[in-house]
Length: 260
Image (cartoon, rainbow, N blue to C red; front, side, top):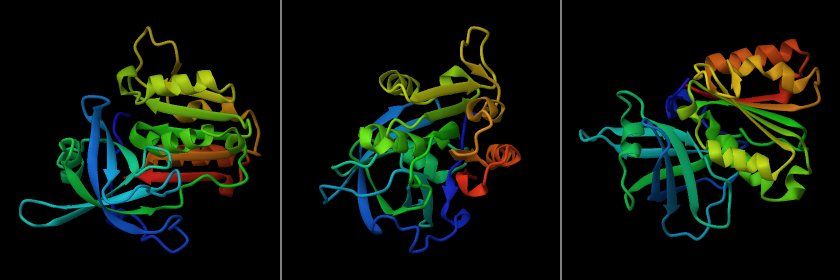
């Protein structure tokens, strides 16, 4: 699958006090650097105006707000695709949605443009204590895992040499976002196993083929003492949850974020 459609505020459960892992705030975000990841997908780096540091937890999301030309207010939510740091920057990974006003509005922004944001929100975050973990993503569902993995691997104390698998499914090789980046992470960290898989691969593709759920049993190898984090469309999430529960996993060990 090549695209994960944007999530809307109406499609989420309103955040509770337990979900606000960092102080909730409203701010103006200025686009610093837009990068094309594919014909329909953009990596957007923002900087928050008026502050030196933006605090959030890896895996959280932000709500973006703007107005249509007719004055209608539009609000949409997107996962943060960058790790927490000591600066005021964050990144998004999103694709254009046909007739989707906000996704196209964001993708059309130029460096220097600003948009209103609220957040951070969400409890799709790493659960302590860290276990050997498999991260399962398709399309732009990779966004929170890019945040989590960079944060974990930035400090050896955080990942404690736990085995980390990133199983990333797409249709074709050109759809694999951040491919070289993840290859480099795996090369630097022996405990990181990067496994891209393609459902419509070219004959010369040398990696895994098929859908992500087809490769999960070979990763877990009968173990039930791991964590699984899953992000993508509902159908993929259901397939992997049912698979893992069928392998004897406790549902509390399976965490997921659904894109609709």
